[in-house]
Length: 106
Image 1: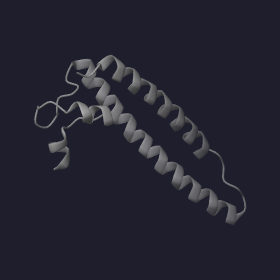
Image 2: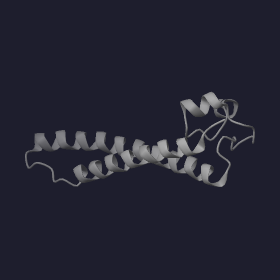
Image 3: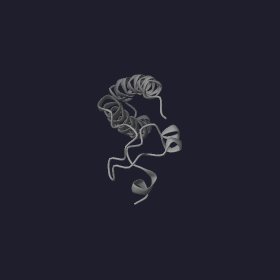
Image 4: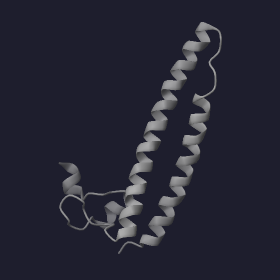
């Protein structure tokens, strides 16, 4: 059986890490671009990469918050689609899993 307190602690730690990364990315994105047009092109490419990383981080934050909500309301480990239990191995591999492997495969 899943120790939800340990999972919640793990998820909270990851959430704090991601929040710090997002803050750093946002600070980098607010930096002014260089005056040189070639350097501006490089800066814009860098911004696109940072924006992609930021979006991936924000997506993961949403998944973590969803898992923490499920822990809080007692539904963690139950598939949000079919209502069946999510396999322990799946939860260990992916603690933010909201759906069982069958529902996630569809």
